[in-house]
Structures are given as structure tokens and as C-alpha cells.
Length: 264
Ligand SMILES: Nc1nc2c(ncn2[C@@H]2O[C@H](COP(=O)(O)OP(=O)(O)OP(=O)(O)O)[C@@H](O)[C@H]2O)c(=O)[nH]1
Ligand SMILES: [Mg+2]
Image (cartoon, rainbow, N blue to C red; front, side):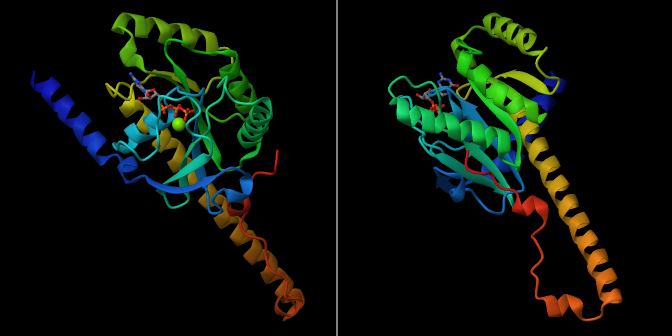
């Protein structure tokens, strides 16, 4: 009893200390030029229209209307960036698989999504959200095909878990785990609900871990680039005093800060 109470308290404390409560809308973009320039680490939320991406971001932030949700599929038609800390972003991607979208627009978003997933440097990890009642559709598999070759981790969130009984949920989780296990080692599967908040702690821990690791890596790379630059310019200055200033050449920004996505 006591143990259960302390577990409940620590769980509440964990959620109330969750740093995503400070999540704030940063920008909306519909092409790579609109992406934040200072991004060091991003985690994107992908999934079919109506899978619950915007709801999941709101649940992480413990807010109702940070990311807009809707019963009408295709509500999120831009890429919305939410800032989670300096240089850290959660990205709400437009949903795929919405039948009412004209072919031309669908092609545009397919190109966009494949380019983003394959080439966006700061994209550390991907959450793929799938309605627990319809997991691993052809288009979800397509997302994984685009992203998994990067070797970066994926979190499969089986959303709307409140719609199934506990035993049904566990069965689907087991089946999805078995289906994806051969595809990649760093792929985890979690039942998630924005209504019951099932899976919330695990999701926060995973996303937080990715952002922290990505930021540390980006900072270490920037520091080593700066050190190499310092050593290089020191040697050049020794060989040819005053040459550095005379050349007037601007140094490139540290690689991590300069990472961006090319137009798909
Ligand atoms: N029961 C239940 N409903 C949910 C849950 N998550 C989302 N919904 C509902 O599902 C609908 C779609 O949710 P959104 O979060 O807007 O979905 P989305 O993936 O952002 O959709 P697009 O922006 O169209 O791609 C809304 O009516 C939500 O209230 C959940 O965990 N349980
Ligand atoms: Mg949405």
C-alpha cells in the first residue's frame, strides 16, 4: 500500500517536473527555408491523419490547445515547431493517408516528408503514431523505410489505447513488437493514450533522452570544430603572422549549427 502510494507520488512528481510543460509554439513552415536555423536536436511526430500527433504533443505539454487537433483528418497541413529548450524542438508533421487530398498536394507532402526524414540533420529520433486499432499500414511502413536507414531510433506510439481493453492492448503491442523487431534494434513500441495518459511517462523519458543526447553531441561537435579551427589558425598565424586577418575569410559556422535540409 505504502509502496503503491510512493510510486503514485513519484509518478505525479515526474509528470509535474516534465520539462515539456514549458513547450512553446515556435514557428510553422511549409518548406525547409522556414525551419528553425538554430536547431541542434529535433524529435518529429509522424503518422496518418487523425492518428493523434497533435493530441500527443498537447499531452506531453499538459495543455489542451498548444497544437491544434481536429476530428477532421488533415488538420495539420504545415510543419509546426515547438521549442523544448535552447536549440531543441518537437515537430508536428502533417498527417499522411488522408484520402481527400488532391494527388498533386499528396505528392508534394510525400516528397517533403521523405526529404525531411532522410536528410534533416538535427532530426534525432522519430515518433510514428498509429491508431492502435489500425497499426502498421502501408504508409506507416513507408515512413519507417525512409527513416530507419539513418540508424536513428524510432518510437512507435500505438495511440488511442483507451479504445481497447487492457488485454486487447497488450495483444496488439506484442504483435507490433514482433512485426517490427527484425527491422531495427532501436525501435520501441508503446501503447499511448491522450485520454488516459497511458504511456506518457515512457514517451517523455524517451523523447527527453533523445533531445538531451542530441544536444550534447551537437555541442561536442561544435566544440571540437572550434578547437580544430583554433589549432589550424594558430598554425597558420605562426607560419604567416597576420595572414588570418589579412585574408578577411569568414569561418564556416560549426557543422551542427549549419546542418539543414536540402530541398527534396
Ligand atoms: N479516444 C481518444 N481520442 C484521441 C486520442 N488522441 C487523439 N484523439 C482524437 O483523434 C482526433 C484526431 O486527433 P489529432 O491529434 O488532431 O490527430 P493528428 O494526428 O494531429 O491529425 P492531423 O493533424 O489531421 O494529421 C481528435 O478528435 C482527437 O480528440 C486518444 O488518445 N484517445
Ligand atoms: Mg495534427
